[in-house]
Image (cartoon, rainbow, N blue to C red):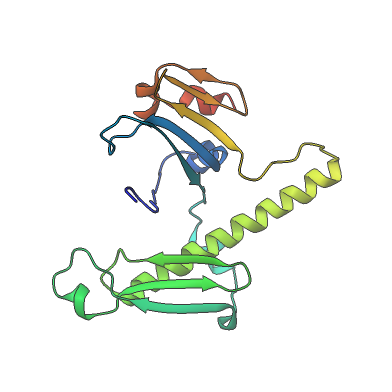
Length: 191
């Protein structure tokens, strides 16, 4: 298998979460494989999750029982000289009731990595609670629209023709390179 198993981005700016929260879902990419000599078309799916970065007072308001957590440490790997080969600085926290796993390896200190992992876990739990409240409100309002699990929200076709199409708003463009280079405002604004 070639490629990334996961990637994490921090997007900062005015109303960054508000602009990007609609990107949560499955994205489909169709292209010629750069790894195969016979130039076959390849379809790849990426699952995108968008979580807000919350203020410390919001995060601190979330209480998680120690019995709900499974905390493991491991060697981080990567930069850091001999430290990464000898000291277990990476932290993985599993929230047992929800099944959420958070792994942090970016700091050289286990304590800092644990703090970052706890903040990310609490932010995800708050986002899930907020989504559940919205689902309850929609159920009361009587919306008949159901979100189907696993359906892609956007297609990026680079071969045999060039097209980016959002399935929710039917917005589309043939400027695939511009879109992949970051010209997203029209598409996100159409939602």
